[in-house]
Length: 324
Image (cartoon, rainbow, N blue to C red; front, top):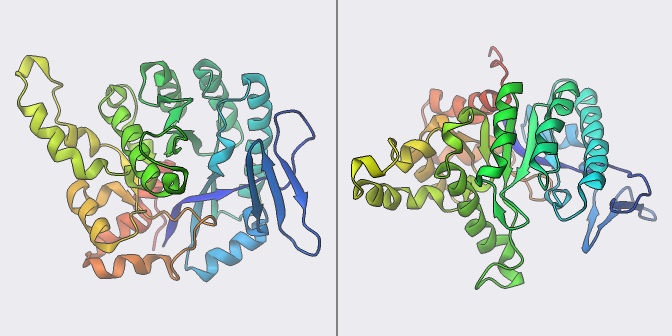
């Protein structure tokens, strides 16, 4: 059983309202041109047609996938009321994709994190739709997601039994990173910062960490945890948290998007096979075919492989493993 825990969807159409995206048909093609503010993208129908997604899953040996909205839809700069209406439209569409997926698609919604109290309240609606949690950004208009003001969202997700998928949002104002590198180096830097803000910012004591998943393997966080542990150990016992940073980090879950077997082997060795899920960013990025082949060079035993291909994703979703 193979689950892709990091895949995205778009909604085929949106109401013609201010602050909403547009999805214009493309002559002679099943694709659509998406425009959302300054963001423009030509989306193939696999983004929004369930039957195309099932075909793509079959081609890559993917049994199930966890889908979340395309990250540019996490636009926290728009006014809260508009965002709430937009998010409800998106969430209802994703619930439709889940229903049409015959049990093979699990959905995550979005909430307006620019107002944490509204976002927390909207999680109840996500639960009512049968979605398994919410995708949230690594920062909210520049404020790291680990800031205490967002704790109410984490606490409400715990109460409702929902997962939170923390997706990296590269910053346009990242110091020393030009536009050409925002999607590569910028994602790594921001992924590190966002995950570190949660791991070290107090959320670990106030949320259920088994239901928090970091995209893009939390950037460079795994590789700098030993340094964080070193400086933790230099502080007097009464001036430091009771757990080392690496111990806190091992309470969360990370996807496999490191683009290199050696890097994936490192994060499995350092964080544990019970902390890693498969994730591809499909269809923004191509999947290996079959997806689980990326684990072949790593020398995993059957139990480790089962955790990474299925078990950890199901833990994040809060559903039981399928009997093999």
